[in-house]
Image (cartoon, rainbow over all chains, first blue to last red; front, side):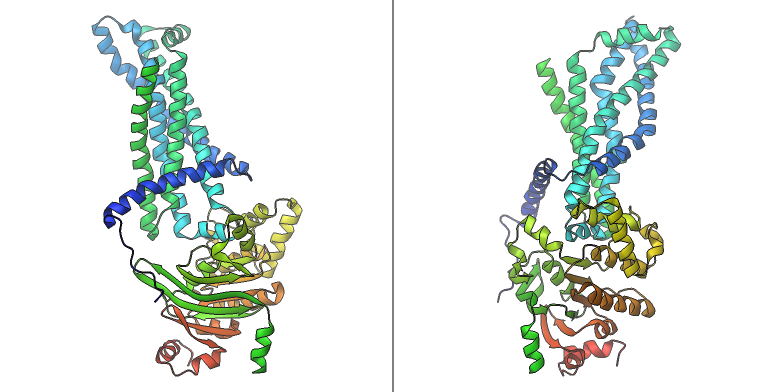
Length: 262
Length: 256
């Protein structure tokens, strides 16, 4: 008599699930903001995660950043030379790298490397009941696992973005130097001539937003993984796909806002 | 009669009344009622999928019941806020079926994890002493610096139990403690469950479908069939019942 009756759906099962799936991430994000300021703080775990996200991504970021700067310069030269404007190359490259390429490349690389890692790690912890084990031992798993990882990605992606920008500019300089024998100082003087505070500031804001997105999406997918090992794979995959999609959406929005200010 | 009177005088630690829990159309618990008294080992026996694990997950607040009352150490679990639930969980140890050790941590870190986060004022020395002491209790001092992946199934179970014992719980919940282990290791785990009760004065619920485990560890057996307790009592009393489902369960097990 007291057995709960089959769930009645508000519209249809599919529609209800769609709206529930939209609501649940917002609940997760609001829990993050509630927990992030509440002691105790997991400083040691945050530092460990910063090391995992930041230091362990350096090799990949160095290679990608350097190639991006080098190739972009190489590809841009013929078009500029056609108009006799190859002297604008340092400025053009700097604008492209600082405004768009450095934040985007860093975010996409981090989403692929770190986002999938977070999704898979938390997913496997979820399906093997390790998260439940934390909960029953009176430890807040959300604080230890989610808050520390999201803080780490939010802090580390801007730093990695600065590093990517520097390495990409170095790649660009090497190409320019090889072709035009431009000196290091002269290249960077020309490059930063057209860069404004707003360019650097908007890129920093972008990468903070991207870092937060990568962390929260990875954690959400992993924390809510189900269906055993298949669920872990799905969580890792969804972490990358969804965060990359959101990064592009955020890029469009932030560029629109920045352009309206500029 | 006098035995019954004695039991009634004992302190009630866990009281479950008319508990219902469904997952969609799957009605798992259908009116389960069970009382567990202080320092008693109650074994919940039943086939897979009858709601045994769901029952102990409701007791420690991992799942919420649809209907019914779960009272643990005088507190209604369903009505507790986060801080009260955390306080209660400090008094409950939960040994998971697959041990649920933290893969990325050594045995030492696994054991220190709940301790340093719940008793933040402890010194490094006190934490080390507590870890060594609890590892001695489960007889695995030599594994202190090993990773969970380097341990055997039985060792993982013991470390899982040690991790819960480090907080000196009043209640122990064992989810299939002997599942997937060889008979000798099963006997060792059964002895450990009894040792835990003697040394830590715990009240335990042991979820299993292993009759040897039930016989060796249980003061009382609660037979769960289709989401409710069909029969409770001593091992012999339960299996003297002529109910077809209970007899089937007994006959299909290796003890005759």
